[in-house]
Length: 376
Ligand code: SF4
Image 1 (tube, protein in one colour):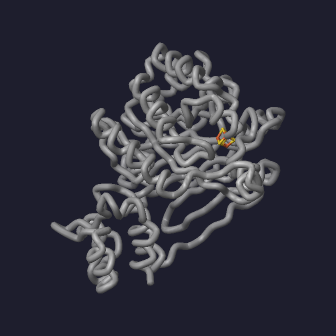
Image 2 (image 1 turned 60 degrees about the vertical axis):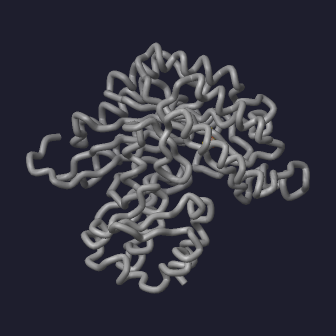
């Protein structure tokens, strides 16, 4: 779709909510055993893409996430991506990422992604120890990461991320070091190191609550995080966000735009989008999405927009520039937050120098408490 006056740029997120089995910690919109709904799902997302109002917007990043997108039949993915190209103006140099899980990657699927110009992959490695993967309820084992990366490389994908989890029950610092060594030996361009969040209504929550699994102490999890930072820095990775590390030039543009409050379309079940200062979420239940139920919309007030800028922008190590904040909100950071900035600055958690507000290295560990100080 060509429109010559496209000054507005956005991302596009497509959700694929199917998984081989449900992991013990997962509360994302993803389901196992619903493969019979995949064809209906492909039709529904194609309908949604055709109907989405997108005049005058060009798409600079595409992110296919899940769930496990690599589980989606290649021929359906081919049709869905062709439909995306027909309906949206996607820039020639767009970053196009697709999530996948080890052991579910096939040559055919990768060929489909290549055909549609995908240039980035994100893979859920999580840990390098089989007993931890088993405890997490992951379907893959450590060796599958290696074979899936080999497939990526032979299909020409060199720009890939590996996700790693920290703070798992029974996980030791040595496990984390070993996981990092294994990950680095596969030469990824990007690593995401996430702390485990035990969500209610998950098997993990029940096992932690009834004492079957014990989480490592907070200090140990912090040491794991620090270990990741130190090891990855030594290997030339720059930390550009609380949990994300990249070789120079390989930061995920889609996520960076999101943290800068860039606009994005959300397509698919449970997908969130942000356009015209409205945040929306599609129906989070598969059957409701397939039945064409309406999405929920929230208009973001000016006050909430200011809070979002700080909450999201402080995730980035480069912080928030005064001039960007003024351009977005028509007032300076100092005018918006005044004396509230002083406490976290005095405590060495935040700096506001040379026109940039950012968390210190220590502040990155306790971002939430800094936000509480700013919002009080
Ligand atoms: S593979 Fe990912 S989306 Fe699927 S169940 Fe596991 S954590 Fe959830």
